[in-house]
Amino acid sequence: MSELVLYRKHRPQDFSSVVGQAHVVRAIQNALKLNRVAHAYLFSGPRGVGKTTIARLIAKSLNCAGAGGEKPCNTCAMCIDFNEGRALDIIEIDAASNRGIDEIRALRDAVRFVPTQGQYKTYIIDEVHMLTRDAFNALLKTLEEPPAHAVFILATTELEKVPATIISRTQHYNFRRPSAGQIAERLQSIAKKDNVLLDPDGARVIAFAAEGSFRDGESILGQVMAVEDKKITREEVENILGLPRREAAKKMFGHIAKKEVSAALRLIQELHDSGYDLAYFSKLLLQYFRSALFLKTDPGLRRFVESDMLPDEYECVTTHISAFTEDQLSRAMDIIFQNMQSFKKTPIPQLPLELTVIELIHQKGQEPDHQERV
Ligand SMILES: Nc1ncnc2c1ncn2[C@@H]1O[C@H](COP(=O)(O)OP(=O)(O)O)[C@@H](O)[C@H]1O
Ligand SMILES: [Mg+2]
Ligand SMILES: [Zn+2]
Image (cartoon, rainbow, N blue to C red; front, side, top):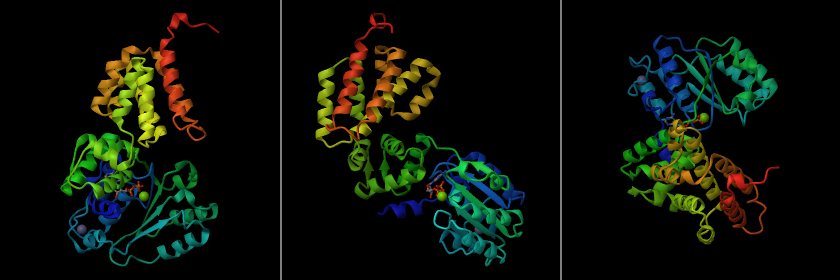
């Protein structure tokens, strides 16, 4: 199965399938119900978190012929045309490739024509921050006097590049970055619909790799399902994606806590021989020290730590946390971080990680009262 199919197949057809972004969904559904949809919206936020999805749901709901109101019926002819990609009254423009004044002027002329099928025409302008200054000015004129049938939805990943004059003409919603848990949950429900058993840890490993984007999570799942299509475990995910085993980072944290230099160096060699990306591995290791520091600083931060790790990894942090002082943990993060900068220029691939581990274990040996004051 291609990733495109997976991605299209599961695009939310209804507001109820949108995960998170409750503040946006609530406001939009309310406006639909009261017939008070604005003429211009601005959706900002990271990529792959539902901006285009919600924009399309607005377009569909506005022209739905069913009783709907705050939601599309998904059964009328208009909704069906929409779901099958045949709707004419939704116009999607990618501002990254249509940046100039001519394109926006053409848009301004086209906006005046009444809708073809429904009551409204919805214009979605993606990556709107890419427009030139002249194009922005032309767009502003359109936003100032939009025809009654037009709804503009501007989307951007870089809000700071959108002129204040544009922002003030729109109803602005900032989209939130989903947690790994929210992404994992969605991946599991997608897998389930396709009759694939994706275990919770496997879903979390994909969600971590997706770094806050539902879209990335879904395309990674697509890659994995192309290889393994019945039952997917955490190990299979790591194998298919060629990721270093998270298990190995757990082991490494234990070696450092117990000052086992030789075992740590051997592990690095093994990882290197298996062809794993050691920079990525360092990132996993960094997570352990960060989590330990969080917990040491304030046990109330536990829920943040837990959302960034698998349950057995969290347990490993708590097991070894007493081996470090708060100060050692923060310096450890700095050491890992500094050494990560040298992965690109090192003559020996293992070197940055080896230095990291030796420094970490060595600093562990320095008791606070033996340290020289400078
Ligand atoms: N909040 C969400 N809930 C459920 N799925 C989502 C959400 N956000 C994104 N997705 C999934 O990712 C895909 C791409 O999302 P999209 O709305 O195009 O992101 P963007 O914010 O970049 O416009 C969607 O088709 C959907 O499958
Ligand atoms: Mg988008
Ligand atoms: Zn409908």
